[in-house]
Length: 141
Image (cartoon, rainbow, N blue to C red; front, side, top):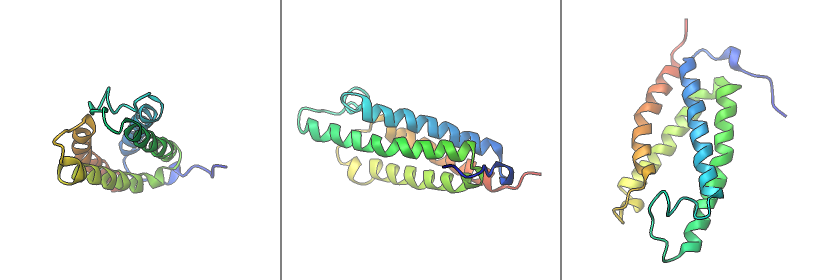
C-alpha cells in the first residue's frame, strides 16, 4: 500500500521534517479532541456558548476533526517516510494557517470578538512554518 521511502532523496533540513512530525502529532490530538470529545472541545476548550444550535456546533467540530485526523496521518507519513514532500506539506500548512488566521482575526470568525486558542496558535504557527519551509528548501551539504 505504501511506496518505498523517499527519505534518502530529501536534501532539506532534517529539522523541518521533525517540525512537520510535531505538527502532525498536534493535528492528530486536535482532530481527536474535535471528533471524540462529547462537545468537540467547543465549550470546554474554545469557550463557546452552546446554548443555541449546540447540535450543529458539535457536528461541525466533529466534521473538522474527521478532516484533521487523516491530514495529520499524511503529515506523519511525509515527515517520517516521504521527506521529499516536506516542503509541499509545509506550504500547505502555511496556506491552512494563513486562511485560519485571516478568518479568525479579519473575516467571518472575527465578528463575535471571541478568539479561541486556535486563533492565537495559527498566528504563532505561520512564521515558524515559513522558517521551516525555507530550511527545507536549502540544500544540505
